[in-house]
Length: 103
Image (cartoon, rainbow, N blue to C red; front, side, top):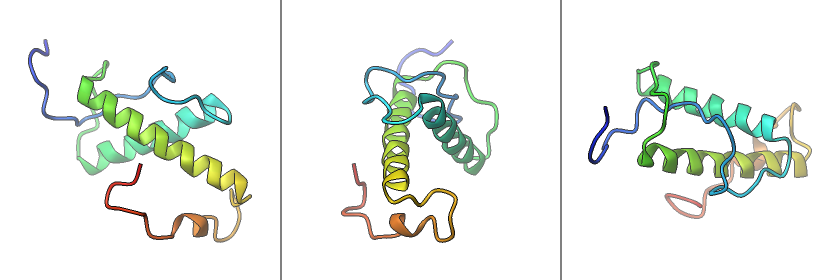
């Protein structure tokens, strides 16, 4: 089993439900989880490992929380800008971030 400090975050397991450590979705939880899990899957693909663990480590949980918050921001802005499924839908998201690791 996993004991001690886990340094490797990949492969990331799917996020099965919204947790209380992440602010609740402003839209459908199902939509949020779908987007979050698509992003997690893409990260796993980039890391070249498609066999994620069943339960997340503490470090993986932090990644889940970060990805979930960013997906929330994406969906909120997409719906606010009515940019979803239109031409140039990514335009509102193409501005430079305020720092290297925006929150």
